[in-house]
Image (cartoon, rainbow, N blue to C red; front, side, top):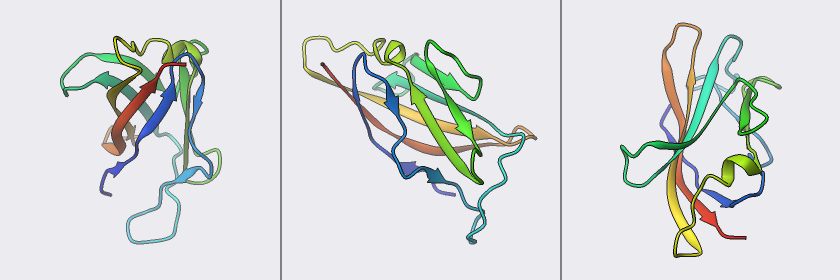
Length: 126
């Protein structure tokens, strides 16, 4: 599956939830949702350029301070939530908007990783 470019626009200090309708990951060349049983996921935001250290990381392990990713609440669905505490870690600096990069990667039960989303993150001052 090709990586889908997906931009996030986040108000720094506010919770950010994945958009609705939720994303459904389908088996290649079919309309069957991927069975996500046993899968894990990680999403991270880092400053541009690539190779910069991660600023925020969330996973399928619920973290009440930073947020989490939920896989397969419905067949093939992927949702995520960055808490206000997580988005507060995105410094604004001298501008009202700073651009970061993000990725969401899933790992199957055998450890094979697939990048589902990547794209810019626009962090907005409140």
